[in-house]
Amino acid sequence: MSITLLDQNTINKIAAGEVVERPSSVVKELVENAIDAGATAITVEIKEGGISFIRVTDNGSGINKDEIEIAFKRHATSKIKSIEDLMAVSSLGFRGEALASIAAVSQVELITKTADSLSGVRYTIDGGVPGEVAEIGAPEGTTFIVRNLFYNTPVRRKFLKTATTEGGYIGSLVEYLALSHPDISFRFISNNQNKLHTSGNMNLKDIIYNVYGRDITNNLYEISGKSQDIEASGFIGKPMVVRGNRTYENYYINGRYIKSSIITKAIEDAYKGFIMPHNYPFSAIHFKINPAIIDVNVHPTKMELRFSNNEYIYNFVYDTCLKALNSKELIAEVSVPDPVAVKMQEEPVVRNVMPDVKLPEKNVSDSMPCKTDTKSAESANAEIKQKRLPEPFEIKGSLQMVKEDKVRYEAVTKSEPPKQMNLFENKLLDENSRNKYRIIGQLFDTYWLIEFEDKFYMMDQHAAHEKVLYERTMNKLHDKTIGTQMILPPIVLSLNMHEEEIYKTNQDIFKRLGYEIEEFGGNEYKVTGIPAGLPKMDYKQLLIDVLDGLSEESASKDPDIITEKVASMSCKAAVKGNNRLSFNEAFELMDELMKAENPYNCPHGRPTLIMMSRYEIEKKFKRIV
Image (cartoon, rainbow, N blue to C red; front, side, top):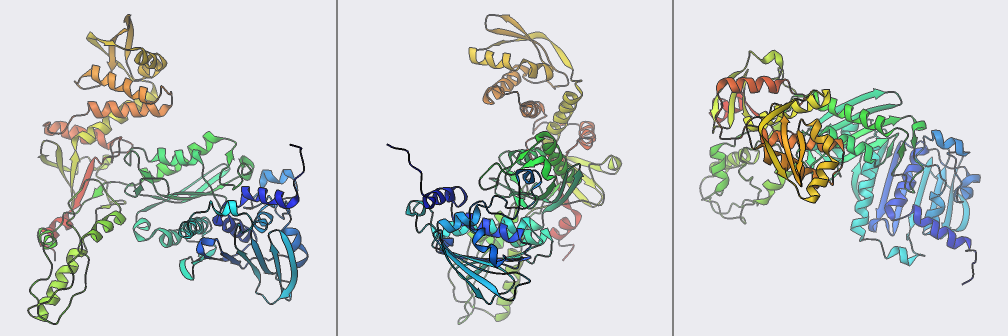
């Protein structure tokens, strides 16, 4: 087969594949152009998921009439002039490929007007073939209409998903763009229905409310930080606001929504010990970073970038998030459902009612048992909606009965999920509170009951002791002062070839943890020393568990492994439930817990304490109506 040059039309369609992957790609490029043009209001309208119709309207600076045709040429841009400009690019776009790529695979109509023009301009381009330029009445700004995406590349079109799915991608994109630019008013319309409208008042929390709703907005911590070349501001969620995937992890660099494994890891590492494994936090963080230390020209969609110093970025993000988390007292406040309300929820709320009166179907909340872990209002609402009343039925009795039962019904349905408190006037876990709390007693040989000011606390002795052991060991590791406790007789371990390989690869980890291990001949090893400070337990099984854990990690030397193994050791070594402690031991445990960096959760994210206010207790006993 002979080598031939491709014609320009084919080249353009192939090149468009890198930029225009689906309708959301078109919206992204056009909205970013509008932002670069200084727009303060942007409207995105789509039909059929953007496959048949996309319209993006802005009030930006517009395009000069004599530059319109050039704007649709490949590599035509006003953002940079030379390669040196890439070192300090601050605009969202800069390659000059977007309009040419979009025009190559769709039918495009452009209406634009600049501030100093008397009239606007209309221009069409069909599949890369230019149309006419004509004057038209138009407001200042630019409108792009894109019809029939991929109409001339049917192979690309058949790989698109359903209109609903593609529309969902665009909706998510507009949400990200709105969160990344709180100073711009965004409106999103799908199939003639308003889906999103932000005010552009520069209040990020308002946009979070518009996008994620009240439950997320009411459970946020504001964060801020500043260092050389980098500044951060925004919000992160309380540890109770978690999801099973990373869809709620949002961060923006210089106004650009991106994904970075470095920043993701820093945020998630900051939450370790605050949330359970395999849960992911909420974040909406804006970063201002010196353009000289980042490279955005590494991916066709500019969704990824490179940092000149990954460690510096990681440390800054980690420290900023951890500072916000550690500045609050994160003890979950729990609420016990009213016994009367629970009984009412198990039976129909209204019975024996008079004829000719119909009640519409209503939702009745399930009884909500007290839980030690907090959960989002969203999941609680989902549970409430699962239980419904039967079809409308006849009512017998007086109308007054109906009104009274309605009041009782509303009281039942207004049950609230547990809340995670922000910051109490005085902290229980503060050295200044040492002489102010009173330990009342032990419940089920597991939970210690504590009175402090006008609040009642329950401490899980296992989770609390686990946290104390974990931080004690980690501090010694950090200071390189962890000791070794010699044991007699020594422990003899028989290892298979795989286990022996794992041990030899990770000998330094065992030494850092305080183990003294020697070869004993053949495949056997003699353990003469264990980490100092461990309580009486099965030391051999603990060592085997640590070895198995290292095996699961493929013998990596990642420092996280040490943290995980220390957490595992602490869990196994901590005093268990159903073990009776003395009051002196409980006081000592509380005293050590106060000194922990994060005393509110065990290393695996379980709470060490929960709280109920005096007000809540008195409500249950009807002292407060």
